[in-house]
Image 1 (cartoon, chains in turn green, red):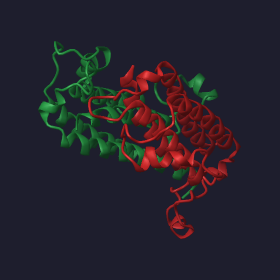
Image 2: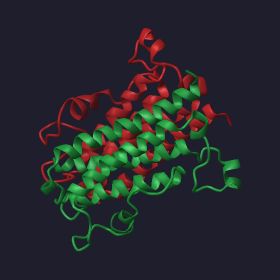
Image 3: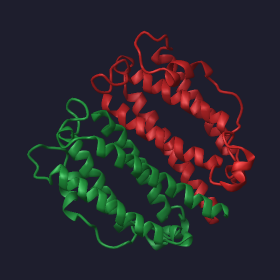
Image 4: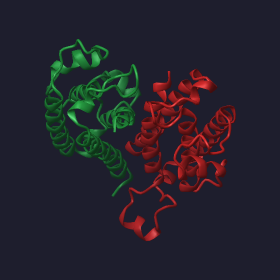
Length: 159
Length: 159
């Protein structure tokens, strides 16, 4: 295994392990618990679950892997702060979205070659990428793993 | 820049950016705020700050970079759960430890060559490493960045 192959492996391993932690945590929380705030005056569990799905959906765009699965989630879970008056899917629906999305992302990630992980992501221009080769697809996995861990540290407070 | 060099850069960039986020967050919280729990019945801010320093100290061992700076922190902040009866340094002391430690880690990380990042960390045997080359020093940075982000997502609730 080359150093480059090893690098891609450890980045994807960390993403997959983080998703697995998310799965385990989500499955321990009841639908009622997801309606609670993680701390007084802070986001509800349901908002964080929807937010994670919406952000992971955007990875499909950034990684040039096709259309979003759940584009309607961007409005309530990214563009808007948590608000009990905002119409949003049920926790049961969000659980199903999460599971389906994790499968789709895994399939698409597994299909990428090592070289493809070092291609530019879609939010950087070809000109900028020429000087900034670190703005690649692998970097999207790294930053979104950070984002996922940040919010898992919050969701766990609902236990 | 080779793919391997780019990989090391994006991993270290994410660590450094996470430390910078931690710095910014820690500086916005008062000493009094650090005494509060992040959510009812959960860890206090002071415990999480000490926990991060203790875990980062252990990176020095794992990365074969010398002795821990603050070995006394392992007992109250890793081996023990948060407890107001546990003797621990003041928030002011912990802030100073954090700042000093970040500087030391940065110096040591900056001094490593690309090849050194792909050497085994100290918690894996040479035999196991022969078959599992992903258990390298770069992987320690990836997993500890996840850990840091997880707890930053909690500390931010004190704002």
